[in-house]
Structure formats: structure tokens, C-alpha cells
Length: 143
Image (tube, rainbow, N blue to C red; front, side, top):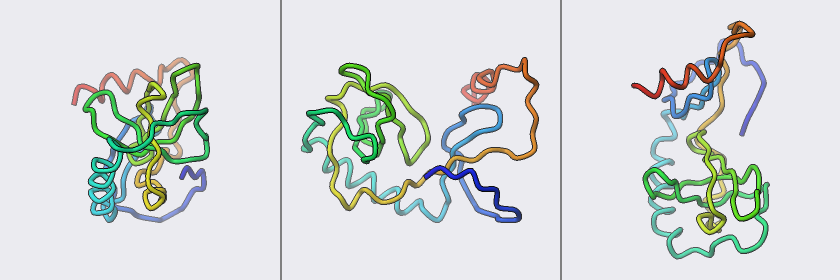
């Protein structure tokens, strides 16, 4: 989950998975890479046969979402519901998108474990007020 606590001197080996802006990014602890593979395998097996979310999605629940760019299934939470569409956050990577409710499915309870990715902010950096934070995303997308 998200944590705003500042841990001084704590070191973690992580792999970046999503850049939000110039000072905010999501990363996965390298020790969880095996967990991520297992989760992916179970989702690929379970989600195509799972029940689509029929009523209003529960914002506190973890679902499976079919990512539009690769057609693969990832764990997600619904952040907002707009008519037949939902804004989802892919909890193991940190990216988000808008999906049709039909692309969100119930997942087995054993897959509702804590997210693999965590949100990080670079501490002590100042961004000028007139700086567009999303400008950084354009640069990061080129790599």
C-alpha cells in the first residue's frame, strides 16, 4: 500500500515500474519477483474464466483488470467509477487506465495479498512552481 512515512537510511533493491512525475515513481522490490511471476501465472489462468464485475465495483477490493496495451491480466483496484467505465490502478506496477467494467473480474481470494509495487517520492527535491511535472513523463517514455 501507499505510505508517506520517511524511513531514513533504509535501503531496498528495487526495479522501477512506473514514473508518475519528476519526483514520484513506483517500484518493485527485487525479492518479490518470484511472487510477481506466480501472481501473473494464476491471473492468466483464472481471469478469462472469472465473473465480470456485475454491480458497482467495491473500491476497497482487489480485482483482475485486462490491460489495454497487451491484453494481459493484472491485479487492480478501482479508484473511480464513471457510468460503465472505471479508473483502475494496477497495484503491482503503479500505472492506471480507464477500463470498461466488463474488463474487470473477480479474482481468487489467495490473490488478494499486498501489492508488489510501492509508491516512492524523492525526498528533499524542490520542483519550481511553473514546472510541468508531466513533462518528465514525456522524456521517460522515450527510453
